[in-house]
Length: 129
Image (cartoon, rainbow, N blue to C red; front, side, top):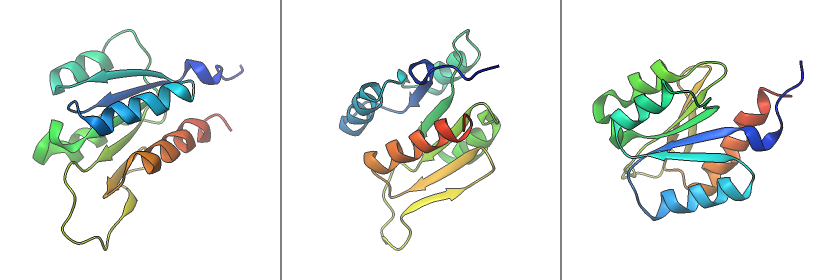
């Protein structure tokens, strides 16, 4: 069985509206991904239980606040990876980058759109060889 073509990969961006989300959405679309956006936890959960196959979720931590880690772990699986992006910058810039939470969920600390796009590309292609 062959892998679906690249343009069939779907990325769900779950975060509040803002300039960074608009740039992320635009860049991912230009790379050929189908991009869906939601702004609330309720919308996210409905989308994940709907008919559309989601290959990657980029989750802003503000959506679930203190339980964002738990949610990222709960919705991640081998065919649907999750990038949890911390909503606020840490005062110290000593930690910048991505940390594995589980095999399928990754936390981004002090990261920007280019780093998120690079990781999204890597995650979407790592499963297809």
